[in-house]
Length: 132
Image 1: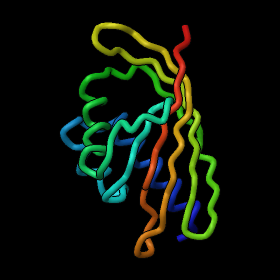
Image 2: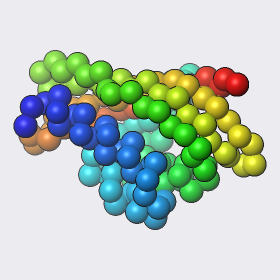
Image 3: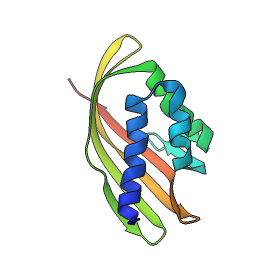
């Protein structure tokens, strides 16, 4: 499979899971796409999560706590250099969280590493801003 096609499929599978599946199914659907020691960082580069289980669970936790009103995600932009790849996804979303309706736009940056002929997410950064 072409590297960019495989990476696009992984990003889309992860994003489809938190938008469409019950929270109890999300971890099982996405954990295979993360490296064992995957790291997620917030906008200020603070480590928000580490490890396949914790990162996978964070998607399920968000889906459990938030009610998605609308989510628009652009097709990932992907750069592949040897055994490393970076995928960026611009998005815009409205959701209800803890009784408040929020509107945000931003982008996700996924860094992939090739391990045993498979691409796995090794690092992810979320950037977002609220809008009205």
